[in-house]
Amino acid sequence: MRVGAGLYVLAAAVVPNHQAGTYRAALRALLLPRQPRLHWRDEKPKRRLEIVYALAELSLDVIAVVGTDMPSTKQKRARRKCMDRLYWRLAQRRVPHVIMEGRGQAGNKEDLDMVNALRAQNMLPDEMRVEWADPLCDELLWLPDILAGVIAAAATGETALLGLLEEGVIVDRLRCD
Image (cartoon, rainbow, N blue to C red; front, side):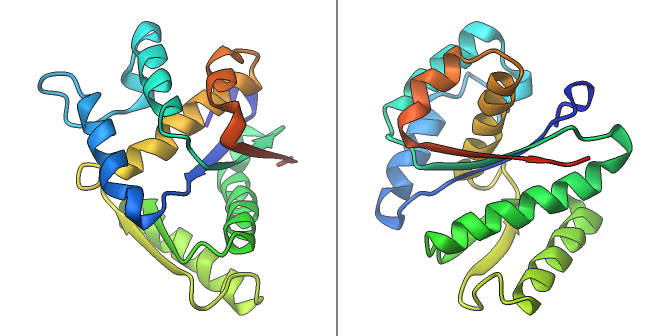
């Protein structure tokens, strides 16, 4: 989220099961000594470039939604709109299992309510499994965080990093005002 720029960004990395171990190992290899996880906001520009170069080697399959024109008081609404579009994209791709980064008990409940509402509207297949996990327990959750950072930067004019990943990236933009 970039409140000052009126942006809300959600990203998903679609990782085939047979490649999950390779992706996890590549991400762990990027950790600095005593660094528990990769987190975009904690990285300096030179390090961000190093991380994106490494991710470009993975041939990522990325789906992202950029909510624009988000009033600072409408962050929950922006998240719901972006989640709606992201889940629609994932359902179109027949993604069978989604792991979301946990946001605490209250945040996870809000997200679960959204998932249940989408299921009730037949916009999310019943067979799509959705769960929440801690990024300290699964390196794959570092990918959406990094990708959202790259895409948010591109949305505010810093396009160089996204250019390194462009080939496998789908970005939908929608207004959240």
